[in-house]
Length: 399
Ligand SMILES: Cc1cc2nc3c(=O)[nH]c(=O)nc-3n(C[C@H](O)[C@H](O)[C@H](O)COP(=O)(O)OP(=O)(O)OC[C@H]3O[C@@H](n4cnc5c(N)ncnc54)[C@H](O)[C@@H]3O)c2cc1C
Image 1 (tube, rainbow, N blue to C red):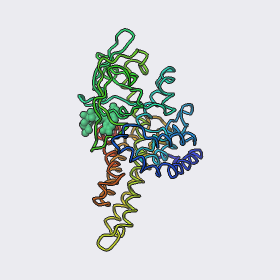
Image 2: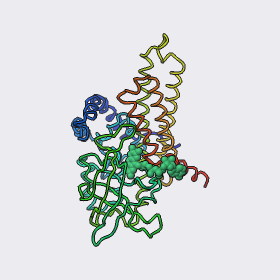
Image 3: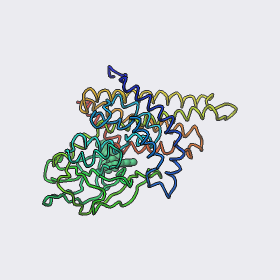
Image 4: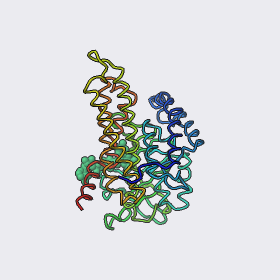
C-alpha cells in the first residue's frame, strides 16, 4: 500500500467542486439525456444537454482532469484523479462532460507523449478543447487481437505516403459524427522482429477509403452516438508525416497506452458499482416482501454488506495502483495495475448483478442497471481479456 493515501489539497478542492457539479447539473440531466439517447431520430447525434454541460464544466475549470501533464491537462497525479474518475463513473456519459472520456483520453495521452508539434497542433489541441472526438483502431476480426503482435492491417510505404488496407472492429467512438481522427495500428515492417513490425498512424476519418461497415452491439447496447464500429480500410492513403513516433514503434506505443489510461476504467467502475449499491440500499428500504422490508431480511443484508466490502477493497487497490504509478511509472506499478484490472470489472459485475436481483424483474428494466452491467461485462474484454492480465501478473510473481 502506498505511504501516501491522501489526496493533495488542490485535488480535495476540485473533488468538492466536482461533487457539487454532479449534484447540480449531471444527475438532474439523466432523464433528458436518456430520452435523447433512446430516440431513434436523435441517438447518433451529440446530445445538446451534454454539450451545454461541457461549456459549464469548462468554465468551472473541471476540464481535462485526467491528464497529469500540467501544460496540456490539469496537472493532477493519478492518485488525485482516481476519486474524481470514480465520481464521473456514477453516470455512464458523465466523463465526456469533463472531457475525460475514453477513448479520447488514451488518444490524447499518446499524442501528448509521442506526437510531434504539428500533430499536436492539428489533433491534440482540438481534442483538448473538446471540439472533435477520436478513436483508437487496433482490434481486428480475423486475428486474436489480445496479442498485439498479431495485428495484420497493412500499412505500406508508397513514395511520400502510407497506404492502409485491412479491417478493424469494436472501434469505440468511431460512430460519433464529431470523430475526426483515428489512431490506426498496422504492419509497416513485416520482416522485422515481431515487436518491431507495427506502427501507428493518424488517419483522418474523412480520408477516402475509410468506411464504417456497421455498429456493433454488446447485449443489445450500441452506446450511440460514440458506438463500437467495424471499419474497412481500402487503399487509404495518408502522408508519411502521419506516423506517430518512429516506424516500428507501434507495439511499444500500444504498451504505453495501456498504463494510466486504462486504470481510468477501473476508477470509473468503482463509481458504477457504488451507484448500484446505493440503488440497492434504497430499494431494500422501501420494498416489502413476506411482511418485512427486504433490508430487514438476512439475504438482502448480506448482498448489501458484501457489496460494500468488495467496493472498498477494489477502491483501495485502485488508489494503491494509482499511487504506485505516480511514484514509479508504468513499469514499477505493473503488478498493481494488473491486479486492479483483474479485480475491478469482476467486482462491479458482482455488485450490479446483486442490485438487479434485489430489484426483482424491475432490475431488468431499470434505466441504469442493465446498461451498467453490460458496460462492466465488456470491460472484461475491452481492456484486454482478464486472462491476459492474470497471466502477466502470475509471470511477474513467479519471476
Ligand atoms: C465494448 C468494447 C469496446 C472495445 N473498444 C475497442 C477500441 O476502441 N479499439 C480497439 O482496438 N479495440 C476495442 N475493443 C476490442 C478489445 O480490445 C478486444 O476484444 C480484446 O483486446 C480481445 O481481443 P479479441 O477480441 O481478438 O480476443 P482474442 O485475442 O481472440 O482472445 C479471445 C479469448 O482468448 C483468451 N485468451 C487470450 N489470451 C490468453 C492468454 N494469454 N491466456 C489465456 N487465455 C487467453 C481470453 O479468454 C480471450 O477473451 C473493444 C471491445 C469491446 C467489447
